[in-house]
Amino acid sequence: MECSRLGTPVKPKLRRSMVKTGYVRSTPVSRPLRPSKPKKAVRSRSIEETVEAYTLVENYGFIVKEARERMGMTLKDLGAKVGEKASVISKVEQGKLKPDNALARRLEHVLRIRLLVPSSEVEDKGLKTPVEHGGGLTIGDVLRMRLTKPRE
Image (spheres, rainbow, N blue to C red):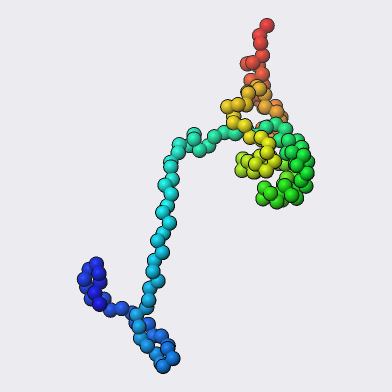
């Protein structure tokens, strides 16, 4: 037997198989190759296109709770539909847990509400609330107040 590419003699490895009358030495039968699925071309995007900044609305907990009650769902039902535990949904409704963009998108889809708005639509209100940056008044907030305060 010769190699189809190189033309050199090839000694196949014989396999010993048992049949009704005894043992037979034969070459292994290779399985036919299945055609592979064509891979989709991945379009490269710049970082600015892939990371579009979204901002969570301020009263997201109230909006989620009202929409869930309007649809007549329990915490457990909503949790099952979005793939989270009821305790996570409860914390989101109470405002103790700020949902990430993926969870917010799933909640938007199931409850038919709007939780994320593009940052370009959000007006700059000057000061951040303590809930937004996780603390009290910062030096930056004080400077911003002094710079935006009209001089008399």
